[in-house]
Length: 154
Image (cartoon, rainbow, N blue to C red; front, side, top):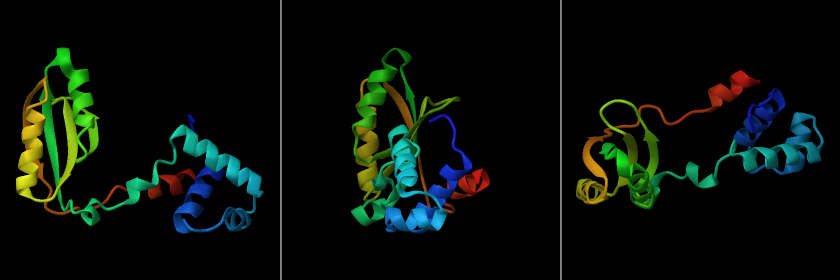
């Protein structure tokens, strides 16, 4: 899906407002056919516009109350293998390739500082990882938000 039209945006806002609503109720609220709603939701799920439900789960409820950001420098000749190995660490919940001194910015969750130490040591053991720099989040001032962008698309 290369772009989203106004109806797609309205559908996403309706689902966000009432995630437990039936397809029929959402279609009636939006003034569209249930088949139209279903087809558009299915297309958005298949194209990755709507991501997996687990993204809405707070890691703190799973005992991971500490959030940290780890900048990682990797050897360029083994970058793909290092990235794949880091992707396999369950505590890694987000990873971005970056410009600057580090090659990757990794968001991790841990039980406590000792657990974070274990995780960062595991990163250093990954072939191709040259160095890491860790910053602990003290407080999430604003969680990830997409709704304002969807509202703008309507």
